[in-house]
Amino acid sequence: MDSFIDTLPPDLFDQTTLVSLASTLAILGTAYAISLKALDRTTPKSYRFLFIWHAFDALIHFILEGSFLYHCFFSWIPLSSVSNPHALAPTAHNFLGYTNRAYGPQAGGDNPFAQLWMVYAKADRRWAGADLAVISLELLTVFLAGPLAVYICYGIARKDPRTSIWIVVVATMELYGGFVTFCPEWLTLNYNLDTGNFMYKWVYLVFFNMLWVFVPLYAVWVAVEDIDDAFAARRKVASVAKRR
View 1 (tube, rainbow, N blue to C red):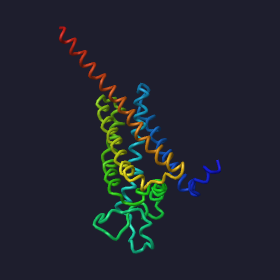
View 2 (view 1 turned 90 degrees about the horizontal axis):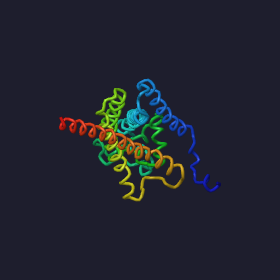
View 3 (view 1 turned 135 degrees about the vertical axis):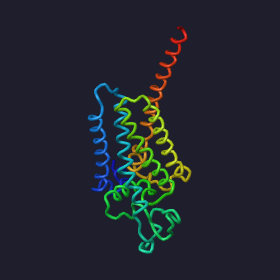
View 4 (view 1 turned 180 degrees about the horizontal axis):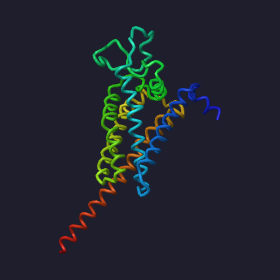
């Protein structure tokens, strides 16, 4: 036990970290509260779960990942003001036309969202700076996947059968995005990841990111079953029509 504790960073459970984790739970609670208002009692449990998931997903995209994009585009410090620029998380060369600035949450100062991302950046330092691959994915996530997740919630509440199609679309986006996010790290032997302690590796990196693997896979399974049922019903109708 002593050796395990020794691997934990001293600031692992500081106030910023605890507030960051609590904010995620608060977003989940908000998604659940929305489901209580939006869904009636006849909603199947699988679709009730998917409503909560997509509401949670949308809020995460808009609030947290949206704040990340804000800091990537609007928070910066001149490199000349930093004594050791190499200690900063990378900002892509000529990002937004500048070569003398460091962008990202690392330049956000005391802003609460910047501090939140600096907590996660302890596990993956790309999220402290302005990594082009991460920013490109987050632009699609915030401005496309987020609104689609809201539309899925609307469709589930309205019991629109076409919602299953959009569930597959968003789940595919989430799975593809997760792969593109971490594949560069696998190819560089986790150059930007801190896998040296249990919490950063298994909680920050594995647990939080694997949620966006297993839940989308479950969403695809539920949606494909629903779509298959629709095709089966159409085949049955066609068969009855032929017998007439």
